[in-house]
Length: 408
Image (cartoon, rainbow, N blue to C red; front, side, top):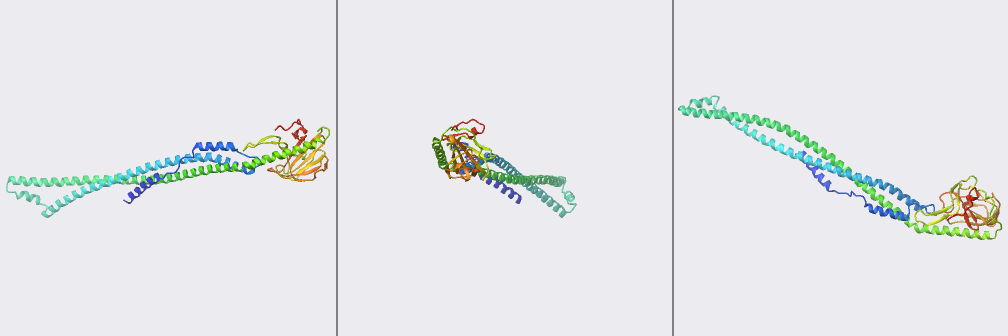
């Protein structure tokens, strides 16, 4: 009975667990599509003008990749959970059937045992009478008859008693055989019930683990979705700041163009001749050209080239001329503008140090400053520009390429 109570407890637990529902669906696909559209509208990366947005969108992209994997894990875990609980329910049903069979077998065993008890009782009664009357009681019954008819009647009674004894003996033997077979069958049913019990317990344990994994996968999906939205919101937060930076960059470029144009108006001749490469051995890391902010779509123009150089590397003036302006702050950081003969001007930005002053006369090759990372940069380099009458030209034109204006 204790075994039956354990099985009944397992069946009850299976029913309770089946009622404990967890969310098995990912957030609606439409919601993710709308979020992706918003990201496309706000953007997906940012240049060095705003490192905060770059970090926010990097988190977004990381979450985006992980979310795809998390969604698939959630789907797989939910399916595994459903299969595990279906299997657990089948095992519980099998255990219930085995329990019922055991009960039926035990009832049949009790019935056969009752029949045997009755047969044994009847045989005991006959044996007791025979014992009390002695071994010759049957013969005496016949010899004491009064006439032939009475004798025949007494003989029939004796035969009936013998036949009853034989039937009781046969019934008892048959019941004993039935009881032995029923005992074997009952043991087999009990073993089957025990096996079903163990199977039900194993499947319930597996189902609980599968449900736990499904819940964990769902929580991961929700967390990553929240992270994506958070990263997008952070990118939007910096939108105004980025707009101000772009406006400041354009203002600075206009100022440089104006100063160079004004200085060029007082120069004679034409901008001819060669220029000296401003950093010994420094390669170009970024060319001139139009730039579109990859997050917010703001347009800007890279009016010079970026030349590699470590902090403190000497910067040499590209041609003889006069230091027109030295500024510090804003997009270009510490920068020097030099005017040359014929209205040509050169511009050196992001310096860590300047070695000249405004109005100084400088000769070609003279060190006028050192490479740095001042202004809007992510690392040390030199931003180098060439302008004619204030208009920016590709500096590469003085180093083997065509002299063409920066087209943006």
